[in-house]
Image (cartoon, rainbow, N blue to C red):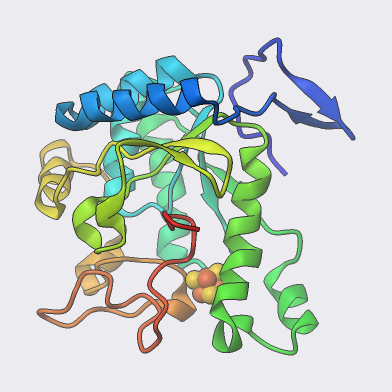
Amino acid sequence: MTDVRTTKQADSDKKENGTPTVTRLEPTTELLAEIESRSQELETATPQEILSWASERFGPYFAMATAFGPEGMTMIHMLSEIAPETPIFNLETGYQFQETLDLRDEVNKRYGIEVQLITPDLTVEQYEAKHGGPLYEKDPNQCCFDRKIKLLQDVSRRLHAWTSAIRRDQSSHRAQAPIVGWDKKFGLVKVSPLANSTKQDVWEMITKYDIPYNPLHDKGYSSVGCWPCTRAVLFGEDERAGRWSGTAKTECGLHSIDD
Ligand code: SF4
């Protein structure tokens, strides 16, 4: 698996079974107090100011996860100007749309940034053979765990903080996201620079700076995940209604606050 960091090595690097790791951040009282107070201060900051603070505070062990959604594309644009050395990675489940994967090339062309694809140990073919068919049909939670969560767990051993492009107004669940918080699932500080942004803010930025975006958005896919679990939304539907449509599942688990 690719090492999700810059080439800059910190003194705390260690080798365990040949795998580079870093000393994990512990959620000490001091750290939790720091991130809570910083989170409150940053409530009125711009996404660029939040990213700038995070890259200075946690670099080189600060990275961004992206599924190349419109929000993520604006953050890639910002990082290219603020902290282009920040590693950016995509959890490549093997089930992403080709249009999504093509955006990785667009990002490289436009910004000179190579988004790292993090892949599961088993290919889709091996995984489906092991489970007697596609697990997304029978047990999507397990499928998301195996093909997304586990990958971020692995990446998290080499990081202190990660950022993603969630917005509070995307769902009642995401409404609880702090700007900076302790992500106990992954043992990382999690930074959400777009927590206070709206869908309109994001699309205004995309238009203003001609930021590349997934062409599926022009075909009614307001939120794009893996192709088996994504459909276009109908007029008036919630923007995430096309994800795991027809099931109670609303999140893959990466952004669960209370797990
Ligand atoms: S979104 Fe669907 S296909 Fe993708 S990992 Fe989750 S269950 Fe599997």
